[in-house]
Length: 193
Length: 180
Image (cartoon, rainbow over all chains, first blue to last red; front, side, top):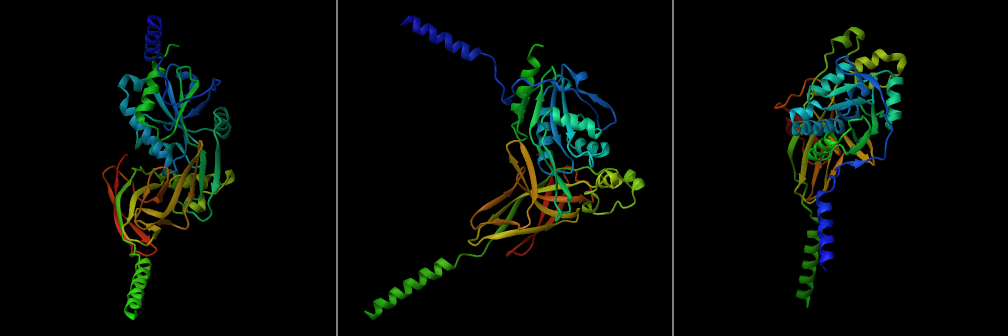
């Protein structure tokens, strides 16, 4: 009887002290997909130069009034929850799925409403196609003839989180609780390389 | 006996009139808000292309051959309005359209998430507001799209928007610009 009790205590201990789990959906081991694009200020951004940082990725377009700003609003609230040191070690990277309309000026205006620190990336068709392929991004131009919007982009709506090795490890829905995303960022930052 | 028949007739008539006499829609709109939007400096666009006042639809469906037009289009930025519409009456009503001085065009749209895919469409038929129900236009669902904003929407700003219904007379409401 005593032995059973002891085993139970040990089990409780391991459950309580076991490794913390992620709030987002964990992905199977993804390959490292490097890319170089330009940000809204004209600076080059290469993923591999940001190893050691946690990268938040979202594929969106500035013409979208609803879900893309919702994601940026979620990001802003995540950023607000992070300490300044955690913010230094986290990049929020927004990659356009609509390069025809999203000029650097447009990305700049769109992002600065939420945070001056968010990066808005665009590039040549070849550069962007490589990124879309690498991250399995679905994007489809939908022409709405009866709408003044002209066309809209149907696209992947998840927030991707890349670990310190720049490997895509987690995904969250774009309206996930900011505290859940901040929790996962902290957990990834605390992981040993 | 005749009296009894009359009473029956009266009850029958009352039931019919009760059943058919649903009250008219009684619409109230609340919680109207918009996200902030910064305008793009259109000077560059003007130099590249003179038709900066072209409606989005005219310049956004261009391909690579007319990339200058696409650049012009980039000067157009959009906004959004979210709100709640309550119908305290018995009969349904329908939000048909909206207009506002802050945008060139105002349309009703819907976003949908299907697995990880996000799609949007224009709602041509409007949104039904059933009797006794509240319909919410909220992020990642129904929303009013402000296409081609004429002014920046800054946090704390207020602007008016006119809503047109199928039965209820037009209602003018004020939208508050905030980050939410």
